[in-house]
Image 1 (cartoon, rainbow, N blue to C red):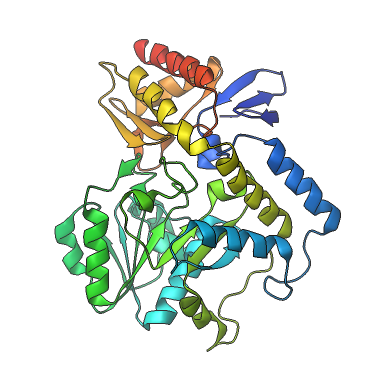
Image 2 (image 1 turned 90 degrees about the vertical axis):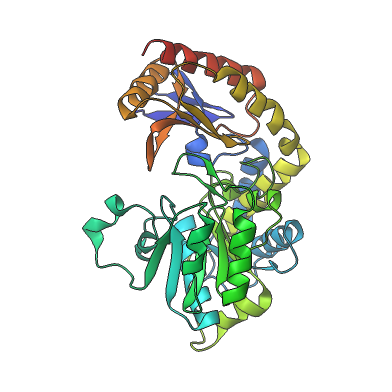
Length: 375
């Protein structure tokens, strides 16, 4: 986009010429409570007074890490009670893959076409699009891609499978939700074969789809949960979470089964704790339905082929990629930032902060519709 942003506040970004933009993508689902939320900034400042980095993660007991881990455990099912913090979502995926291999003693990694889990070597190996992988091969061996929402494909999960990695709603496929019953069928098949089920909620976590975590809507619990993006309130942090019994497997053979220097950074953990409390204290989940209705009301247009998504993660599907880029440019000129999806370039991304003012969202939708009118 070539924008030089010098300030961000709430749902707005400001460039060096003081032009104001509405951020309808939240830094790709990161700034869920808006930019520079006072509670998050305050938590960061308070932690800065005490300490930032102390030592390789795990060597010292650090209050911000403990409080955040305890908070996450309180929000999640009982078997998801032990957290390992990382610097990002893709690093959390790497840790989750290692954990699954260590627990099962198996090597096969199963994922889904058009799934996105990050760009590091292991995460790239299970990515569901060859276009982004071919230039970096050879990647990890023993991977298998299935079709998302295809129950018949689940028969390819066997006693050789270490884990199945899936997004409850595929983000980069264009906000593609799991079909009713698909995740339950996947859970049952993993139970039968002994494969571990990993939910990648990097993009869908912390209210993005209308509940704190997307898997809650399907009442299906994974063996390992991966989080990032909206967790940090704008600060870089990720996590993979499982049972204490499972996570103990990373403490032996070898003794340091997973290492990270900056994972669990105290400032990032303080920001994440404040972010979660903001979602709770400001009851942001309650307001999502009203905002979702605004999106559904405005995006009824002959040029819109499909409106797909849930909560505050939507794909506005147009004729083709060219049409999408035209709309993005027109919206940018009018002070509204939207975007496209990696594996669905024919769709506009709508993923504003959870607390975007309703009037601001309405005005932004009008601008997008006007841009679509001009196609």
